[in-house]
Length: 103
Image (cartoon, rainbow, N blue to C red; front, side, top):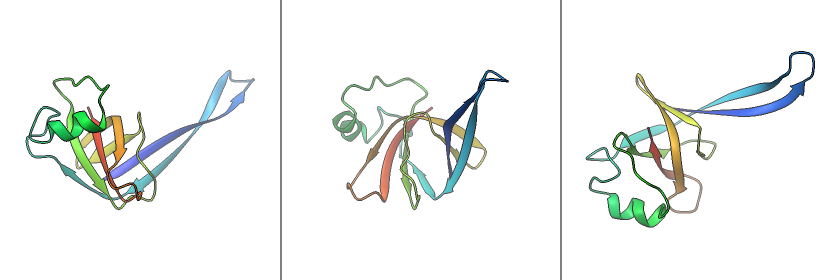
């Protein structure tokens, strides 16, 4: 998989726009069995993200091997699917295995 982070840069007064810096990180992804927030891992997701309101297209994905932590609004590309991360959590608190909800 590829995790893509976009960071807003400095403001250019001439163009009236901010410059963006895009960085890609590669790792591995596993889409949870059932593939939805309400699937087999729903109690874990509800525990990790109690305020999150699940949508019908939400997908639970486990990410591993990344050199940067996934954050809300980052994108993850798995094969030909490009998904936007809506919630992310560090499973063991060591920065190596993450669970994300993406759509």
